[in-house]
Image (spheres, rainbow, N blue to C red):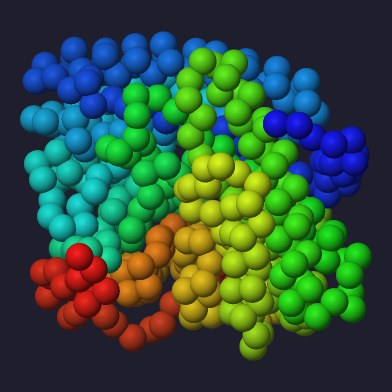
Amino acid sequence: MAIAMDEIVQTIRMVQMENLDIRTVTMGISLLDCADSDFQKMNARVYTKIMSYAKNLKEVAEDTEKEFGIPIINKRISISPIAEILGNATVEQTVELAKTLDRAATELGIDFIGGFSALVHKGVAKGDETLLKALPEVLSVTNRVCSSISVATTRTGINMEAVRQLGFIIKEAAEKTKDQDGIACAKLVVFCNPVEDNPFMAGAFHGAGEGEVVLNVGVSGPGVVLNALKRHTKADLGEVSDIIKKTTFKITRAGEMIGRMVAKRLGIPFGIMDLSLAPTNALNDSVAEILEEIGLERVGTHGTIAALALMNDAVKKGGAMASSYVGGLSGAFIPVSEDNGMIRGVLDGALSLSKLEAMTCVCSVGLDMIALTGDVSPATLSAIIADEAAIGMINKKTTAVRVIPVPGKKEGEMVEFGGLLGRAPVMGVNPYSSEKMINRGGRIPAPLQALIN
């Protein structure tokens, strides 16, 4: 890929002054051939295979980062959904397998390993049920293992039995880590329409349609987009869209170059570029501040959804022109705890849980890294998941929920999660109950949009 000198100069500026980084290089590994009726054999095979494929991931990524001067923030692994290989394993053995994954990630120097997952959008198989029962313990006793559960798709509808169970799982996981403000819940994502090649945590898993091993890349540049818009304060909204498209093109072009280089040096196929703008708590590295630069006094006010839709569409259009293989989630993340502008919007009363839910109709994913009051009920957590799943199901898009009930905390208090997880103001929920609906169980049927054959 030939890159002109002016592009190199622009990339240097984006890195040094505008927080451009490769947010993650994520190696996807298939574990389907590790299945065995003998648990100890399976456990050993999983460890050996991960260690074999990923032994050079951290070193190669760091060497490439130094050579090209573009930071690679996270080195991660995604694996086949673990429920698919559990077979007759017990809950205790499932926890042991999670500890093996955590040990492998620690020894490899990997930030996170995703794929302690189950796909239960239509029903719950034996391995799925075992994984769900083990999940609160797994999330509380491991540091780097991430989990995702698929409870809905446009083609199948919403499995409300699984949704009901996850309300209790999230609540229990929070209680098991109450001395850390419920941090276990930050490693669990509940999906509608999950994708098989997502490089971002906590929702990454290596799907059944993927190959033996692959490298997927997530590039991020909210600061770059923000600074580009600040140079064009008089542009109309059509011109704003064009500015974002051109900027995203440059971000993606740099990211794909680095991703392909890492994959080549590892000797594995390059998979996809995820175009998602993923914020951090660094100064000016905020999706919310982009929306405010477009013209909102504070994120969450009227017009927020229109501005987010404009930005998300422009990101996709610009990135798609720069990459041969766009995949993952690709758009904009709106995690409250990881975005200073979002935090400010909540503290100023401009951004509510209901508004965040509405924003998920047009952004990449869903309700992300939101701290909730510690007394929230399991039924309310399930109802939040059901609402978000319905948005994804009807609109044929990926939506997700990653919420953290913080034990002992009340609305308006602030919790510190640290690192990339940031800090979050605790948000309240609607005081009225959804318990009767959640306890009905069953499955919400697939919508008419599913009948596309």
